[in-house]
Amino acid sequence: MMKKITILGLGDVLQGDRGAACYVLETVANEISGENIHISYLGDNPAFAGGLLYKTDLAIIVGTLSLSGIPGSLHVWNGRVFRQHAAWVAGEDPAIDRLLSALARADLAGGLARKLVFIWIEPENTNGYEISKPVRGAIAMAVRRVRRELLAMELKGGHEQAAMGLAGAEPIQMEA
Image (cartoon, rainbow, N blue to C red; front, top):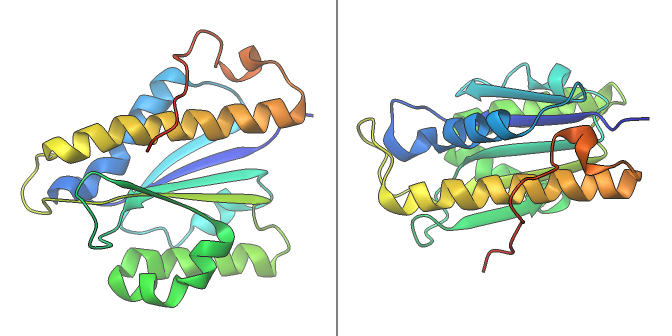
């Protein structure tokens, strides 16, 4: 049985680096295919993400989050770490507060994703339309991380890479 995978993007393409997830999802969508993969850019309103996340085996949420780190760095959290910091994160971004509500609805319905992965990109510029140079590099790192998560899910399930369109994809390298 094929694993059900959902990849969601959060942000605002009209606010500089806050739109980085859109570019991550666009790249992933151009490289990865499969009936079992659903990719959605939800912008700043993930209020209805619960339906997209319902009974998925893997949910990857990509967005930007200022953690006072180096612009362009990646912060990768599992579901436990996200829940641990949920109250603080929700206060930082109203979209994440709506995402928390959507996750809670999926959980209450008995269909929260089996594995949650959050990929946060540290923004530099949140004004204008352009993505900053450090965040352009982080977009490429985030794409590699998504590929790595997808490959791990497929290998865990015992399916061949080709079933997800990963055959011939560039090798995934660990980020520092």
